[in-house]
Length: 76
Image (tube, rainbow, N blue to C red):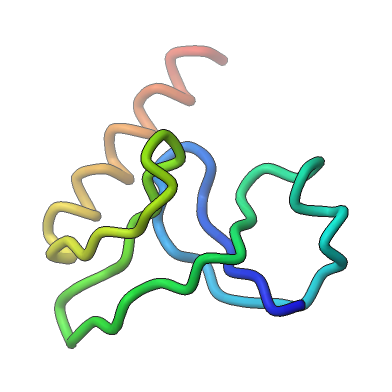
């Protein structure tokens, strides 16, 4: 089945692949829910709690990535 990949820390869309249905219960960062269409300057983000995608501006996505990098560095 076709599945969609997202970053587990930020929710940012990372692409698509194929996986067996049983993998969905064991792997984080994978969903069978397709992201919505998006335009230049936008990126889909998956909300695991709501189990849905949202589309946000790239500028906000870059801020999310910086926050995640800062969190990762402080845990090291």
